[in-house]
Length: 279
Image 1 (tube, one colour):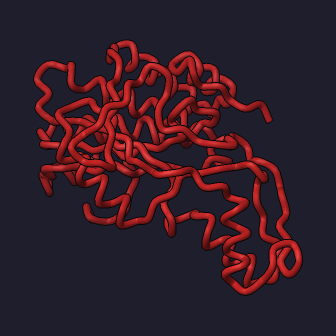
Image 2 (tube, helix red, strand yellow):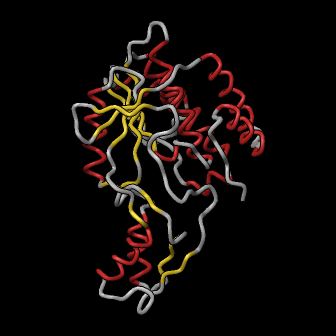
Image 3 (cartoon, helix red, strand yellow):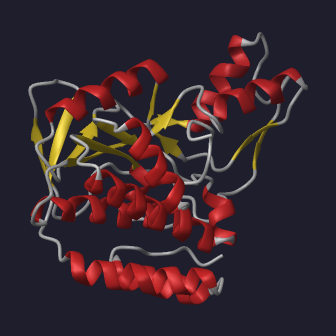
């Protein structure tokens, strides 16, 4: 039962799992990641991405896990959507842990962009649309995203996890941002067709909460090299865990009431750089 898939929000199941397996290292990647859906139901982002993370942190501390690697996202940088804001708060909770008395676990963050072939990846969608004769739907002609492969992502997360001494944000070198419109045209050509002749490209507009481009660092974060050429580290600022805990508890109460506007207002109060797009 303990090895079955469940919800990080369920505190007792988490404690039972930690008690049974006593993990030395935790890679925390559980999150609701679908940007437009979380714009509609922000209380789900609060419960899973924020409160769920707080409960995994608590379990790791209680069972003295050696290392805790939080898998974050470029959407946490200057977030414009609920998903990114929720992951940014989770980052702050992780960064606060090093300063707490009696904590032996080394907590760290790995932040990166999109992964080719992952659930929700755009390439399988484009291939399906091409196979159906089009149209291929692109949100905006200028939208760009960073991409890496699943093996690259896994290897770099593992390597960053061995480097951390506590509270770092590791940024994976994602190379050059790729224009989604160019990717769509390349896939059409690779399938033996001509874009906008055989297969039409249709621009459908940015979805709720989406940006034209993503970033990997935010204002005030100094970027430093590590011994690994593909991994950089950010110097984070100071954190007041007591204040943050109080703010997160208010978020939890608002989530219980499914108070959309209240959640958004509280998120802005915690993360000044959060600038929600009004749709």
